[in-house]
Structures are given as C-alpha cells and as structure tokens.
Length: 117
Length: 428
Image 1 (cartoon, chains in turn blue, green):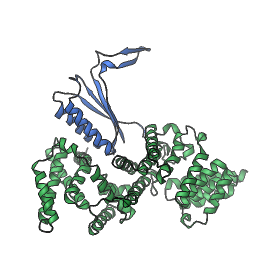
Image 2 (cartoon, rainbow over the protein chains, first blue to last red; image 1 turned 180 degrees about the horizontal axis):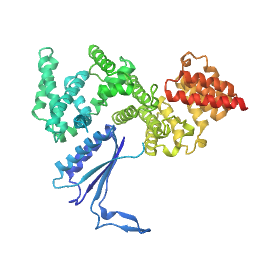
Image 3 (tube, rainbow over the protein chains, first blue to last red; image 1 turned 45 degrees about the horizontal axis):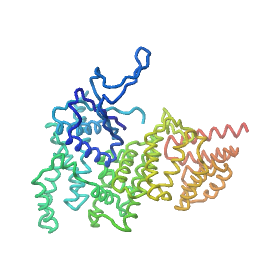
Image 4 (tube, rainbow over the protein chains, first blue to last red; image 1 turned 45 degrees about the vertical axis):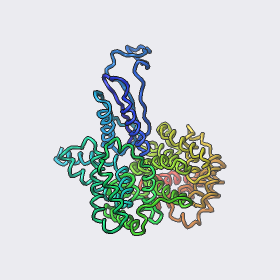
C-alpha cells in the first residue's frame, strides 16, 4: 500500500534546527535504502508560495503569505508499506525526531492512504 | 468489538515497529556473532520479548534502542555459554561487552551504515546451495521480516511446511560453514545471479499467482520490489540489479489494470492504460536508464525490462512498437535458450510480421518437452490460429489450455475464448 505523509505545523518557530535536519536526513537515507520510502521533500515557507483558488465560481491567484492559514505544510513523504500499522509506526519514529531535536515544535504528521494502486 | 481485538491490534503495531528495526538488528547481530542464522533467531527472540512486555508497558519512546539492547543481551548470553568452545567467540564477546557499555541511542543507531552487512545477509539467505523455495522463504524471513504465517499464506502452503523449510535451510547454512561469508571476485556475479533469481521468483509468485483464486498476491510483489530497491542502493554498480528493479516496477505498474471488478484477468492489450501507475512507470524507466548507463543494455533482466518498457511507453495498444519488441526478444533468445522466451518471441513476431510468422515459431515449439503442460503454449497458438481464421483449431487449443491452467480465473478466460471461437467457427 502506498501512503502520503503530510507534515503540518500551526506555528512553526522557524526552520528546522540543524540537528533535526541531520536526523531527518539520516532517517530518510535509511528508509530509501530499505526500499520503503519512494519520495520525500521539505517545503519553503508559505510566504514564497501562491494559491490558486476558486471562490463563488471565481478563479483567483493569491501570492503568499496567507495570514488566515492555520496549518502550514512543511514537508511530505511517500512510502510503500505492507499496511497502516507500518505506516503509523514509521510516522511515530519520524515525529519522535522532532520531539528530540526541535523542542517546542508542535505539529501533525498526517498519514493518508493513496486511492488506487 | 471482542476482547481479542485490541490485543491483536497491539500485536500488529509491535510487529510493525519491529519490522522497521529488523534489518539493522539482524545485521548488527550477524556482525557480532559471525552467524546469520543465529542472528536471525535472536532477532525473533527480541520480537517475542517485545510482544511479552510492550502490551503492558506500551511501546517505548525509542523502540529501536530497546530491541537492540534486548537482542544484544541475548547474543551476549549466548556467547557466554559458548565462550569455552572457541577463541573466536571469546574475542567477539569481549568486543560486545565493550559495545554494551555504550548502549546505542537512536541517533547512533541511525548512523550505522548497514549496507555491506545487509548485502552479506542477502547473499547468505540466497545461497545457491539452498533450493529456490528455501532461498525465497529465507529471504522473506531474514530480509523482509515476514513471519512464518505470512510467508505460508503468501505461498499457499501450511505454516508447518514453511517453518520446516526455514529450519532446514538455516541448518544447511550452519553445517556447511556458510553462516557468515561474503563472496568476492568472480564468484560475486554468479552469487548475485542467485540473489536476483530469488527476488524475481518472489515477485512472480505474487504477480502471476500460479495457483489459487487470486491473480495477484500483492504483498509478495511489494516485498520483492522492496528487496530490488534495497539491492540497487547497496549494489549500485550492477546493471542487472537495476534491470531487475526496472522489470518489476514496470510489471507492477499494471497491477490495477490487470483485473476487472470481478477479479477476472484482462489481457495486456485490452487494459485501460489510464489505470497504469505512472509513478511506478517513471521509476521503472529510471532504473532501466541507469542499467543502460552502466553498459548493461544486453543483460537478461535489462532486456526483459526494455520489452516491458515498450508497452509502458505506448499510450494506446495500437501504438506498441512490435518490431522493436520482437527484436529485443530475438536478443533475449540469443542470450538464453528457453522455450518460454521463444514462445513470447512468437507473440511479438506475430504482432510485428503477422500471425503466420508467429505461428511458424510456435509450431516448432509444440514438440518441446518443457512446454508439454504449459497452458500458455495452447493459449498463444489458439490466438494465432484465431487471427488466421482457423477458428475450429483455435477452439481446440484453448479448450486444451484451459485444462492445463492452474489458476481458476485463467481457466475461465480460456474457456470463454474457446466458446467464442466455437461460435466463430459455426458462423464463418
């Protein structure tokens, strides 16, 4: 089964600490070599992005930052795993790194199953 | 919900956590003990210990460190018992006690580069001394961390049979003094072929599901793909490793399109290509590209991947480059003399140069002893005859093939085609 991990945080205190970056890099390296992780990436701050919206049938393009946004996506990963238990265990391990190497960070790693294959 | 459910749920969680750690556990222990089968046993014991403790205590914050500490303690106990037996063990035990002083934390654990050890593990599990079935079971157990029950379910045999297969294989390794060794030099490529053969066997067992009700047993495909990806990361200079991964990714990309909603098989040319997994196709083509960069374009797996790539790259069935496929099959047939490959070449030639040309090749295969009970021979021959308007002969081929097919759904498909041919024979 294929899973998408979406990491969000409500008040990112800043970019990840070098320690967290290093730990995440090692974990990603291990997971890629283990054939479990298919893809991953971190995202730049919201201010550098844009949103293309449809509101009341009108299409509009809005540049960041988006003050009203509560949850900011910081990164994602795609895994291929035997089942949801493995996906959750893997997400727990990933979030533990945040707890250890970026104290004060709060956020969510959402684990979602791909529709289809 | 019954009382057993939460219990089972925590067991599944523990197994999932253990599986993340299993490769590092087994490789570390193998290095310390100089014995892969023993390392595997102690890794299992660590799982049993976790199953005993974690339901009450909860999963520890750093489960990897817990499992590693437990496994190392078992290894140390084992070595203390064996201490008097061999000086080698004494030295190893001393090394271990030193290591034991500094218990690994998660960070240090992540630092471990397990590539070489993992390669050794894979070579040991896939030793040519073992039967193909034993190699496959051992690989699923030691490399993928599958339980005996899971392996048994995947291969449709009893738990006891798989358990025995694994025990015997491990004993064979230990008794032959092959419990811990890495091939090098010329032996390496021969041994690598043995590894790739096992991985492909596992993939095919899942992909074609020779027996039983289901056409696909996805877990075997996934585990084989995962092993293929592992191999490309630890043996990145071997073109055939990339070729095999490409072949598996490209074949697996069609999984969703291969059966209809009732689970009936859909032939390649009739599949809805929009359902092919484009991410997987990209990965397969990438791996194929790497194999070619490594000058491996004429390898056994690379050629097969190149053939499948022709299908993957055709957005409509009628766009398929059949003359290129038939050329690639020609190369493959020159590399390996195999009636099955020759049969596939006949299909490609039939598409590229017309059914009569394909039938000429198939007719040469009819006497082939290896294909006497192979249902696809009749299936292909029937197809070519049907295209030539020889419906009555096609019906006969398909009916005979249906009797030989082991998979129920394939049988149904062949019977259906035979019935269609019978109608065509009457109305023509």
